[in-house]
Image (cartoon, rainbow, N blue to C red; front, side, top):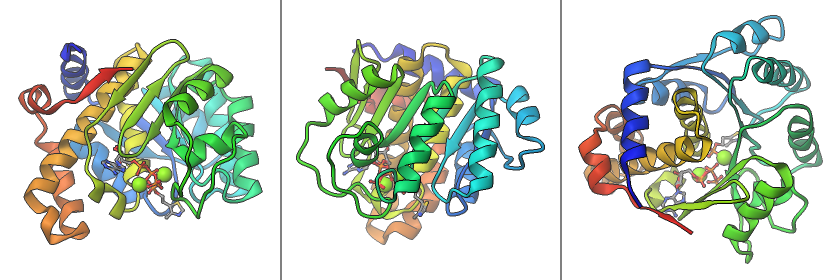
Length: 268
Ligand code: ATP
Ligand code: TZP
Ligand code: MG
Ligand code: MG
């Protein structure tokens, strides 16, 4: 697969420094802001219902994440999401822990019903639970499921009429017509909390600068996975703490040359 679109999106992101509005969870807020900055985007976290509409209007993309949802934050997400829709801003949604409790599952479905979500990103269990498929889940981690993740992503994309990303060893990107697979990344990403959440916000940054949602999302996954591979090579042996810091460094030091060399993406 030609990798030019990945490099073009990355270079546009670096030159435009898109503002990404995040309504995210308390675990990952600082890491997400630092990760977006390191990559070359401009993060803002704004949760108050009094200001989310004004922030969504001026941002390039809106990221909604229910990792530590509360009744107030959910209302703010709906207001922000509707405003982003009104102003044609992409909305990226991470249904963290959908399936773990009924409240999470119901809230994820409510957001998808009330907001026009551009990209839904989660692990296999979360996506399965959002669309009512059987899949086991433990806390906010994926758990074991025997299902075929490619079919699951395609089914979810068709049902929800949106781009769906299922991450794991391989990342699947589906819109109901096309399916792309990204094979970048490193298992040590699973030992640092918030690497899924930061990825969702990175997808937000790419969709802010590239209108083609399949291409923007694929570019985001490749860039993220390449930075993780390089960081793991340098600091992975020391453990997740050193890796987390080096990962931020490598998001900052990412280049078109590294992407060209290491991108692993195919059409299903
Ligand atoms: P979970 O809670 O199941 O860990 P998550 O929301 O943290 O889900 P992940 O699926 O862990 O999201 O994805 C975060 C990043 O880690 C993605 O870039 C993904 O490609 C990468 N990743 C996850 N598992 C692996 C793996 N086994 N090998 C390589 N990369 C992985
Ligand atoms: N608990 C609630 S949100 C959260 C935890 C541990 C962070 C989950 O982040 P990620 O990116 O899904 O690992
Ligand atoms: Mg993870
Ligand atoms: Mg997650």
